[in-house]
Amino acid sequence: MIFRLVTITLLLIGCTEHPASTTCGQTGSLYRQALYPIGVALDMMELNSSAAYQAIATEQFNSITPENIFKAESIHPVRGFYNWLETDSLMSYCERTQKRVHGHTLIWHVQLPEWIRSFHGTKADWELLMKEHIQTIMTRYKGRIAGWDVVNEAFNEDGTLRNSIWRQHLGDSYIEKAYRFAREADPNALLFYNDYNLEVSPTKRAAVIKYFNNVRLRGVKIDGIGLQMHISIVHPGSSEIASALMDVSANEYKVHISELDISVNPLGKNITATTELLGEQANLMGAILLHYRQLPTKHQYGITFWGVSDRNSWIRSTYNRIDYPLLFDDNYQPKPMYCKAIELL
Ligand code: XIL
Image (cartoon, rainbow, N blue to C red; front, side, top):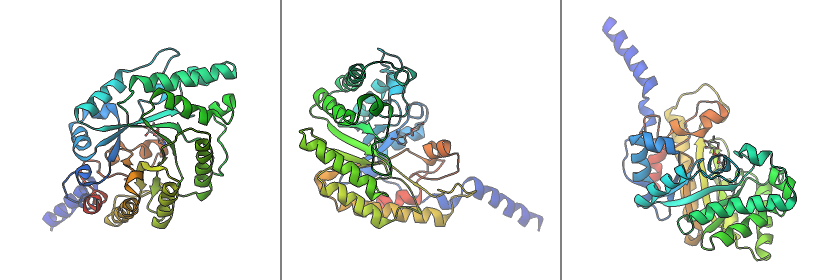
């Protein structure tokens, strides 16, 4: 009896620490199976300190989006000074391992250094600041970065332009100018616009597409749109995702699913990763892959996951909730979502 109790207790403890249901036991290489690039957002600290993290990054993905180090606060922390240490190191990892690099992100209203937030100057000064920022970074890595999120999250949910610091000082045309400066710096790089909720809000998506169609009419080449897809098993559904992907592609933009994670706990409840939740997550993953496959090859820029494993996901720290949104679990073991991807890619 005592023996049985101990066994049951041990089993229960074992279950909480390493729930058997979170892993799927499958091995393979996502990118080697895929017909388009499979990407991941990487964090330099993890890449340099965790062998397991680095092994998965190298084995599973062939496109890398630096998660933070190209953002203004990190790469341009002080006026006139650029911190190339981490970006150079990431570039050399990617070149050594033959990974495509996706630059993220040049013009955003978040993660700005204090000197930009408090910058005083005329419209012309602000334009020069923006131009210099974009062109200094792009010129350094010219020909080595395949695509750039030139502008990030410039639209509100209702389709109007966000009144970001850039818009306040430069007016609505700051977006178009950013793309002109970027094109000048590296004519061969693919230029993307990147935003969230484009898959859930047809209004926001229509506004973005209309805006960039007009920019194109004025002679600026925009190559693609990044749908971040920070989604959950509850919302959006498979058909909404399909419409969004087709809509962007029908307007002749490359489609980058640029920051994919699938929350299993959007309401922040006290949960564990059950077989059922992870199964739902895997099924949605499968639906995304099937829909993405329907796009014309020339529009399949790739699918990028926003982190390697659940322990690296920004969701937990940013939204302060337990969640399991990525392909690998806290112990870097493949989850059902990974197995689904291996099965369907
Ligand atoms: C997030 C990073 O993952 C976090 O590490 C950081 O603290 C905040 O930014 N949309 C974007 C990404 O375009 O750059 C954000 O990344 C997530 C939301």
